[in-house]
View 1 (cartoon, rainbow over the protein chains, first blue to last red):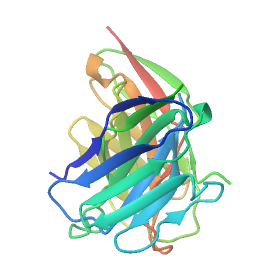
View 2: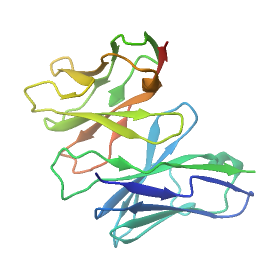
View 3: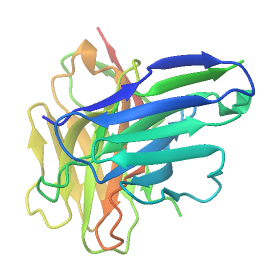
View 4: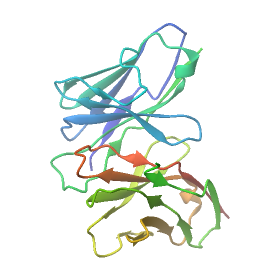
Length: 118
Length: 116
């Protein structure tokens, strides 16, 4: 079945540094990928929709200059948390849908990245 | 308004018993899809089951079944013969077709604990 690979699974960084998270669709092409953020014991909140070859669409309240998204190919999207602060510590998870599948195909998720900013 | 509501923050079930996790939704889109995902403590999101708004029959996938009541806008997940490995967070989600978006709206989740 469709697989989405996310890397790294865990990262600890110092305040003020930037962190890049990669999301790859391994056996299908994804023109669109989604980046979610999940706070402890909370639901997944959509941050942005990543579109291959064009600018990402950000949800209200998400700073596009802080959370840089690049979707350079049909199988790779990256999320860069710039100038990270402790409040950016969270679980980030990407997802993609195999658009060649049937209309009811689910979103496939990566395993997530736990970011801790010290 | 919340698009997906899960009113049970936590549920307990005895091993081998069945359990129902509640989910109600709100949409004006006549065409939509409802999904259930399982999230173990490791964090990954595992797709369990799908129900389309035009599907006539309730979806079933192994021990998972979806009790779809369209008039009530509810899509409860039923897990039969619970196993210890079923202990996890369970999220109900919806995708609306007419908006053209492919993203999912998630509920707040239900933490299921299976008791041996």
